[in-house]
Every structure is written in C-alpha cells, then in structure tokens.
Image (cartoon, helix red, strand yellow):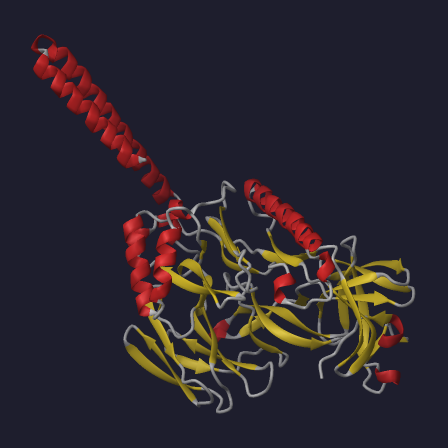
Length: 513
C-alpha cells in the first residue's frame, strides 16, 4: 500500500508539471498547490511510518510471561469396546477420537485476549461436533484420518504475543497457526510480522539450505504473500510448519527463522523476549538464540558421548552407554543461569534420558532431582522455565501418560510444582454408587458428592500413588483415594476409598503389559 501511495503522489506531481509548461500564466499558483499537496502526502507517510516505528519501540520493553495452561474438550462421538488388554481384563473400554486442547489464560491476561481465546474455544467446540457428525458411521475405524486434529503446541506466551499451532502433530492436512496480540486480542497476520517479502524469501532459502530441505523453500515463499502458511512466533524465532505428504498422511517440518540471524526481518516488539524464557530447539540443526549459535551432534544409535558446539567451540559430554538417538532439545534462560536439556532414547521401552548442560561453565548433570516416573519434556508446552512439564507414565487405575509441572532451579535441577496432570479425555465409568470428596484449586474442599452408578469420570490429575482426581461432565472435580494392592482378587491392583477393589467399582480401566 505504501508503494502505491508514493506512485500516485509522483503521478500527480508529473501532471502538475506538464500543466505548468502548457499554461505559464498559472504557474505560480498551480505549482504552489501541487507542491503543498505532495509535501503533505509525503509528510503524512513519513509521520505514519515514524509513529508506527515509535509505537513498536515503545512496546519493545521486556514482556512478562503469561502462564497459559491447557485444557481438553471432547465431542459427543464416543467409541465403546470390550475385551482384554495387557495385565487386566475389562468389561468395557471408552474412547473419544475427537477431542481438542484449549489454551487457558491466567487472570492477569487482558480482557481483549480472554475474549479472543473464548472465541477460539467456541470455534473448536463447533468444529469437534461437525467432525464427529461427519464421521459418526466410522466408529469402528481406528484410522488416524478419522481423528480430529486437536493437539496444540504452545510456542510463545507473554504480554506481547500469544502464539500456538494446532494439528501439526496429528498427520492432518488441516493444521493451523494462531498468533494474537496479547494487549489488543487481535489475531496477527504473518505479513504484519515480517517487514519485507524479499528478505523473507532470502531467509527461507538460507535456512532450508542449511538444513538440507531446499524442496520446502518454494512452498514457504508462495504461501507468504497470501497468508497461507502454518506459522507461530516462538522464543527462538518465527516458526514455519511446512507440510510434507507421503500420499496418505501429512507431516509438518518445523523451520525456524531466528530473531538473531534475521534481525532486520522483524520489529523490535517481535524480537524482544521475557527476562526468563524457554524454547524447543530443532534437533540436529543449528540454533541461534540468546546471542549464541548452538549445534548438538549426537551419533545415531547407542553411544556414550555427544558434542555441543557453541559459537564454533566444541564441548564433549557423556551419556548413558545404553541410550540412543537424540530426541529433543530444550533451551532455558533463567535467573539461575542458562541451560540446555538434551533428551535421548533410553535403554528400555518408553524411557528416555535427560542430560542438562550448564551454558555458563559447560558442565553437565544427569541428576536433575525428578521422580523416576518422568522421562523427557512435554514439548507441547515449552515457553516459561517456571512452568515446564515432564512426561510420565502412571499406572494408577490405568496406564496413562501424564505431565508433571516443574520449574528450573539452581544448577538446572527440575523442581516439582504440583501434581501430575492428565491430558486428553480418557474415561472410566462407575459400576456402583460412590461418595467422593470434591476438589477445588487442587485440594479437597471438605464437601462430598454422591455419584450414582454409570457416572462418567475423566482422568484429570493425581500424585501417582495415593489419589486420582477426575473431572465430571459438569466440570466439578472429585478425588478417588487409592492404595496399591498387587494381591487383590481377580487381578485388581488398587484398593479404592479404603474398602473397594478397583475392578468392583470401575469399568474402562486398561493397563499396559
């Protein structure tokens, strides 16, 4: 738009000069008028540009973290099956193939951003129901194509921008990116984030060449001017999620244009980050963050060492001889120091090993102070080192994956900040009436509730050993007290509320072998 206004002003000037040559008697007045018009137009453009830049600079002070949580919602399409799995038999098993994660804002968020996220939640609920209705007759088909792409990856959450992508981990063609101005609640376009299309194209060419993915460059450059790309703002830089299909499924390749490498591409407000932040780095690729160039080299398969290169200086570290490939990298900048967490495939199924590298003295530690049940980070929520999450496999009333909230402490150790949290919508049904304690803000309220037989209970939180909290259909939360009993009758593993065995009171439990 700016170029077209300049062209128009130039055209007006040329016409005015032509008229002056043909009609000399009116030269002074017409030239004066034309000059005034052109000067005003030019001054207006200059003032607007300076005002916009001044506003960007004014808002470029370090933003505050927004501690965003993630909740799950489900559609009405429920699958039900029976049979026997793993260690325990089950009379019924319940599953929702259509569910979605919703970013949930803290009380400190602006009213405008809260309203925008409420609108997003409403859109997702409607999309879930529409998808479920369209696939209602394919209830017995376990194909991923008949599952709603409801996963969310939160990439940035501060008082300047809230950004996340949906569907990029679901092998689905309908992935989307969402970036909001945290102050105004307005959804931001990529063409508002990137200053210059030619610089964008050049940056894409450079990064895809560095990563050996030049075949993706054309797709990124074609999608930019039409705002057709799946993208998000991260704490390392602009994240592009570029689709690659094998004919059946679509997978998304994450390409990062870092703020450090392409500083002129972004406004100051985009580039500035909170004083403390975290970011998921792309394994086996060069990362540019916090003024550093970082590259981790880890041999495929089992090996006892790996190399971290920082600004062209290599450092070699040890890891378990039995651990395998590099799975993920998380960078955390905190008041305790800067740390790089390297996650490797462990020596048993579903296991992994975390090695923390202290970026100040390039020392390493594997003693992170976390429970044995935990493995690597939950990569769907990595923005704030005070609210990171570790994945864990729990065997409480079912074998399920949960996340433990942790914060980065002294020396890079990870300190637990609460109970394990279940994501998704795994469900049990009560076989008999139960009296359970109501839970508010993570604690028993002192009140109880009478639940009739065949009440639906959705896994919500727990400590992995003495209780599991469930969400009811009306969003109330109840606590089920449990105690391990490996010698229970009929294969029961837990004593419930001190007097029942789990198989006597719940259907839908499933345990992995």
